[in-house]
Amino acid sequence: MKIKIIFFIIPIIIFSCKEKESFNNIENINISTESVFTSSLKTEVVKMIKIKKSKQEKNNSKLPKICSVIISSNPEDCDSCFIIITLTTRIDVDRISGYTFLENELIACYLLNDLCSHNVVKKENLYVFNDFISGYSDLLKSHPDAIYETPIRRYQIVGKDSLHLIKSAFIE
Image 1: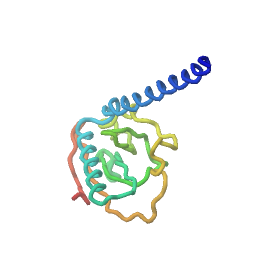
Image 2: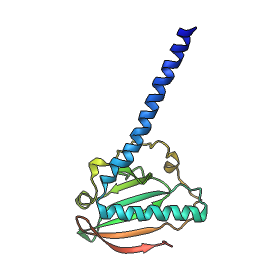
Image 3: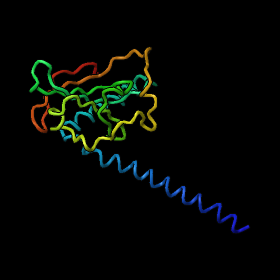
Image 4: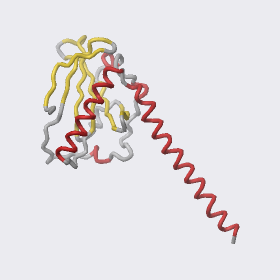
């Protein structure tokens, strides 16, 4: 009887240790990925996260919202790089370059121009999107009935760690 109990308890202990280890890895992810963005970009992403939380509290919104960082060049002037930080209700699976976590929030990154993004994002530190992010399955669904004003901020990349705000909309 004691042997049966021991064989029953040992797998539970092993399983609980592995679960604890995976939770520790999640905590490490949040710490280690903060170095994905330069300090100026990180500051602006954190501002958008705060806007997201404020809007969710104010509107009691059930729609999933994700902070998205889009980096590209101006089509008219390829040397002019810009960043758009916005809230979206889904992930564009065809364009996402990777994702990270900042302040326990999922951040989707769309690096549409490598020459522009290398100064502000460490691409090698992004997690690769493989058609699924555990715990975020709603972000792959379309929400056609969703009506909302999405906060958006557009910045010009001035230097390696310097951004200039060009446009800000739907931010209360």
